[in-house]
Image (spheres, rainbow, N blue to C red):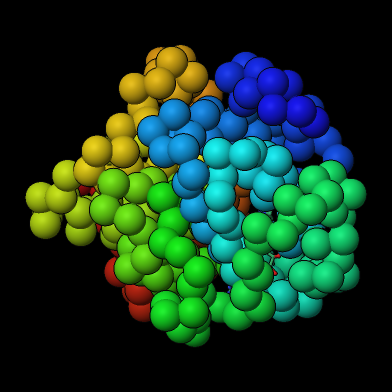
Amino acid sequence: MNTESLESALRNQDISIFAPVNAQLTDADKRSLLAVQWGLRNLYTGYTYLEIGSHLGGSLQPHVLDPHCSGIISIDARPTAVADDRVDAVPYPANSTETMLHLLRNVAGENVGKIFTIDAEASAVDLAKLPSLPHLCFIDGEHTERAAFLDYTFCRKVLRKDGVIVFHDGNIVFPALDKIVNDLKRKGENVRSYVLPSTVFVIEYGDAAIHKCDAIRELLLNNGEAYLYGLMSLLHYRDVYSSRSMQMLRSIWHFVNPVRRPWR
Ligand SMILES: C[S@@+](CC[C@H](N)C(=O)[O-])C[C@H]1O[C@@H](n2cnc3c(N)ncnc32)[C@H](O)[C@@H]1O
């Protein structure tokens, strides 16, 4: 893909850019991530992108192809099954850095050389070993409250002052997001947080005001889609919780565990 067609794909959020390597993202997620990239690359020519959880490299593709992206750090612990707060664990067969690089090389040739890979959990990474500090972090690793919070803590340490942290699957890791956003509010930090369809949760720090770009403003004006997607993904749990057959179990459960009330 030449520079002109890439610019046009990013400007128009053309998700065909994700076609070569399968990404675990909805079409709306892809559009939102392209809008974030478009907003960021207009602020920083020569940005560094850090991703936690890359699997086959699907979400790395637009950054590997982007000449404005000067470096990529891909952190992935490469387990064969990934813990998830909704289920026991999700199997991840053929989950290797070699496979990812092979697939990406077919898409982006020698551009793959700008990817620095780390096969570890983010919390175990030696910060001094990072080749550069990121302007944009994407968190899409283990989908548990604990891991999302640890990944965020790592990203916060390495993110540049005016940078952006993006979470995928905000509808799953929302207890960690709630903790993070409240903590930022309590400390009076200069941040904005918002959600884009389907499940892309964005935190902008300082002067990284990417929401001012048209692509994101447009998505924000219609972010009812993101709100509903998140709530509908939880409907199953409400149905089970409210069912008659669960009443007895519920009263025992609440006797032992007081109701968590994150809502204010
Ligand atoms: C949902 S997939 C990532 C999908 C990818 N971002 C995409 O859009 O195609 C999750 C990835 O996180 C990795 N992972 C799981 N637990 C992790 C952890 N604790 N630290 C870092 N990576 C982890 C898995 O190996 C897997 O490749």
